[in-house]
Image (cartoon, rainbow, N blue to C red; front, side, top):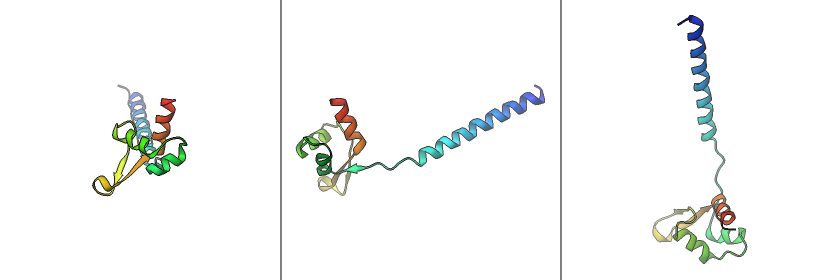
Length: 90
């Protein structure tokens, strides 16, 4: 191999490495996720009842997290996931 070819390959590898590092940094600085309680879900989407939201959670149709301990913990639902489900169902 010629010296110029080696330098070209090294430059290409370095640019790929820099691009990969930039993508990793962008993913770390993702926007915060807005979470809604069940009651807030019913206020944001008119026509949905708390019972319906609880059923969707129990059936695994929308993702959620439970804060606190056990069944008494508050259920939080990502706002984007709620809208995605509503738009998909419509």
